[in-house]
Image (cartoon, rainbow, N blue to C red; front, side, top):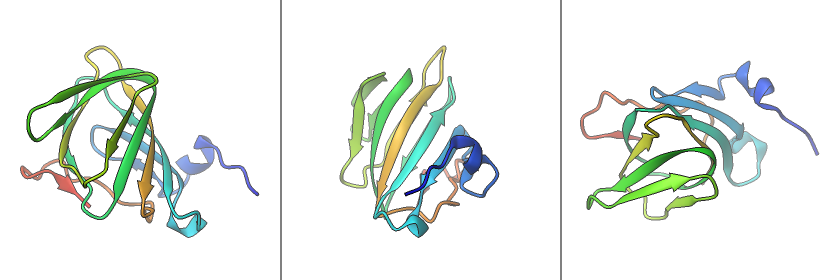
Length: 128
């Protein structure tokens, strides 16, 4: 058993500034749990085109607001208490709220190594 805090992670390469927010990778591959758990912040008024080709992801909103849009153009508002699930390696647009950040608990399977970073300058979207 162990306890790890957000502050603990901030002193490691598992605290990632990913361009439009931050990700505290609280559990990673080296922890041997079989999944990654992150505290993710999506900054207000940002838009990110993302795709996880090697990982499935589920995100549970713990605070704030935002939205996720699939590639067919369907927009799903996300508020506290909502979960969105990328169960088919779905490419998506992730947006922070107009007036507030979107704060998520993100779970990845298989687990991340922990230091992966997005490239938001790629016009086809950031993928890993």
